[in-house]
Length: 450
Image (cartoon, rainbow, N blue to C red; front, top):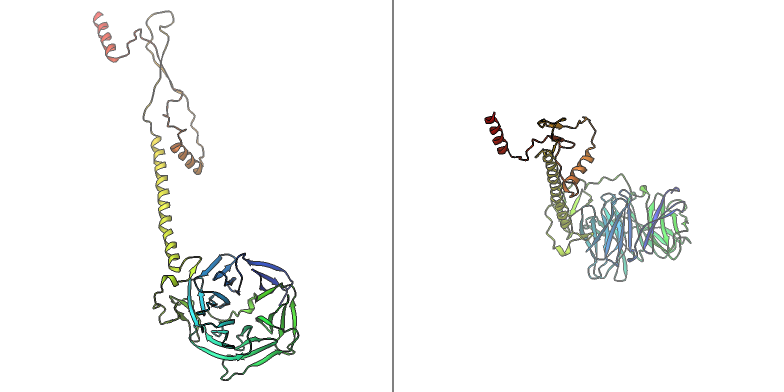
């Protein structure tokens, strides 16, 4: 690996990445749970972490946050199918252990393999390029290496071994690599009619109690038990082993995060397929696995599962999450409609307020008589203020704010328009009567006197 390449390891309750130039970064941490399994999907940048103390499997993505999967037993060992994005994990419930698979994106889970009661899975690996699951079981004082299809419906006993502390899949050579403690690395072909195990590494001082195997190019990487280092062995030519990292402190799990460690030449045949359960890769094409483990013929005939058995994703089942997501649509539409109605009312009130409903006029008496005496003047002077017509640009946002304040603030009241500065002067007539009937009577009397 080059200086920018490296892996991820678990130390305590943290997951850290480390590069070849010894630069370490914390990727995940928790204060309340112990990490029992980990794997990384390089294609999607998604980290899977399991915890048996909280019975949860967590998918961590840098851009989309975390998705916690619960109500699926006690997750321990984890292995990711980097082609479909499915994650396989061991449910270590003592009375009914299983191997399960989950599609976190579609919020679906299914049982793949039912294991013997009281058995322990010591290692788990997935080879999506050849559509296989590899797992070691410790049961009745013996270790057995098993091979299964990704749907779990075809299993094969590959080998009975003395120990199996770690597994890796060699997809190009169609073989499984397992660590046989205390100091052996053994290869077993997938399709050999008879057991044909081959010892690759043995009696090497740097290959002691290995676990967390990771295959990359011509080397096998592994953690050395009870040490603070990661080592690697060359699988060809001299087959020598050497320390690779010295700064992995108290690590118990390790995976590679280099893009070439997961093949990119395998087509995802599950894309575009219909499946009510979890779609997995098969030897002849995609297969749909229902939650109870049954294979669906057309992808639509999975049995209805009791609500108590459904997997929960961040506390929600897939059906509840879909229903809750659909409820937001009418709520948002209703909110926008209400806002539009309110805005229309405001604009309507503003437009009506521009009309002149009344024109108050102020009258002021002039001097009683003209200069030098005589009859009072009946001329009424009305002075109109001179207004200058101007055109001013009005910001639309400012106009809306102004309308809102004028409509709903008690400090701003409507005022009649058109009377600002208007003065009307009417000279007195010598009579304090101000009714039209009185004025008509007096004019009639004056006419007959003449």
